[in-house]
Image (cartoon, rainbow, N blue to C red; front, side, top):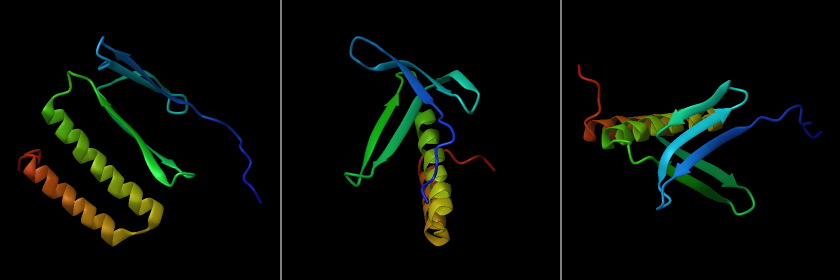
Length: 115
């Protein structure tokens, strides 16, 4: 039995570019999340192309995003990927390995919270 679509939801990203096509400002909205024109400094988007069996991606950040913010953004994104992978596959051990790598990444980038 095929699932029936009961509703649709929109997520949109508005990007203002300079003359060199580099992002100056980014805003995003999510109808179901109650988010409208929230400011963003960076985003990573990965979409699985089922037909091509390949990941399509977009990664953008504004010129005002600092290196330290980018380090934290990547660290948090990697941690989220570990959580999502475990939830989607049930692969607990490899997800823990990825979290261990995230700790190593944070240590090397000097972004661990001070004790």
